[in-house]
Length: 178
Length: 400
Image (cartoon, rainbow over all chains, first blue to last red; front, side, top):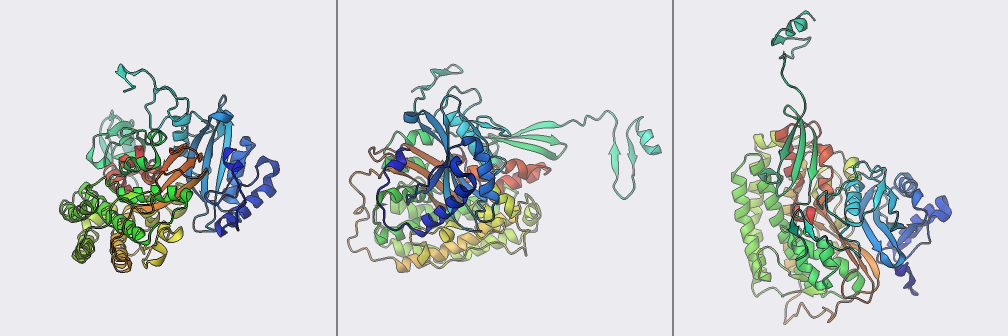
């Protein structure tokens, strides 16, 4: 990951980062090599679920384990990494009102297949977030209850937030590029 | 049973066991009907379309359709530099532009390591709390008008005008300010500004009380909202609700308190949730009450800030702004408590460019609205209007 390579010698990590690291250790203990190493940067500490097929399992563990209790999915953002030929999502999780710790989780898939497991049944808020990621990046979420475009029209062509996106010439007889 | 058989021959009034009287009419079509609400319906607060599957007066399912106001914020953000995004952010939640700018600047500043001058912090908190009051005034006013109460709407807009004038004096614009900049603010307050804000606070305090009495002691308003659109706390959290919506479900959660930013830790304010005496916890009335409480708390915050604020003395609010804003490589999720809930920005910087690689806006109304389908099930159509109003959506932020 380009973001993790820039890690430099940092002074003492902040309490929030230490709390996230404790969370990561619990997850690592359970899932072993299915998750990557922990990136302890101080703006948004994260880890990656390298085995994307197990993402839903990891998500359920994050939500239901009494040491973690991540009941609140603050944000789920689609991502495009053209250099690595990957698409992905970034989830910002928080244990709201319980442990108050936070962590970010990344899950990637290849640009060609672009399929990820859906967590809409784990956190209901993910339903619309995943629809948005599908709309903008064309990531298909497996077992999503209602995967349709949400912001663009149903018959829009292409996925606008991909880095190589080229806008269609006309839409229902209306010239699109201006 | 005998009576039911009679019904085969025409319309007969049947009295089953108990007191309910049921009318059975033969050949009366009873299939579900699709009813479209919006996108040009005043009670949907903008261009939202609800496709309601109705069974008589009862909504079986309401499916929201969005995107009518989609202006590709995230695509634009990848094409302009960091300070250039601020005006775009204004146009997301146009009723609370100051708060949106504040959230965006907090997110970028986390990657920048700039020291924000103390006076700027107070400028920011004062203008965003004023904007919060203005935003809640619109929310409460339009909510009342949705439910048929016209007077509170006029009261709200009269008082909101004072705030617009104050913010216009500070920034030059009435609604879309471009006032809070990364690393500072566009202008310092004009002379006598603090005095004028103080006068407004004194003026508005009794008006806020009056407004609250006008609605929460109005029997029709209470009957239309109490117990309507119930949302239990755990489901609300699972839906990602935040702000007044979550507090309406009884969860004492406020980012100004729970993930504090700027000078909020130094300020004394309460995170008030309804106690269940006038409303049922989690209903539309609770969400309305939270907004009314919040206006009072905001007044208190403004008063404290006016006192604690350092003197101007030739102060330049642009002094800490870097010449070229190029954040270090990394990613950040920064957020702030907006009038409608948690507004978050997920920003990825590559460390070389002056434009973000990715700038995702986590819109509070978008997330709050996603529970609409569940909230609307089994409600009456007029109650649907009460529910949408209580969510307090701004379609500019939902669609971005």
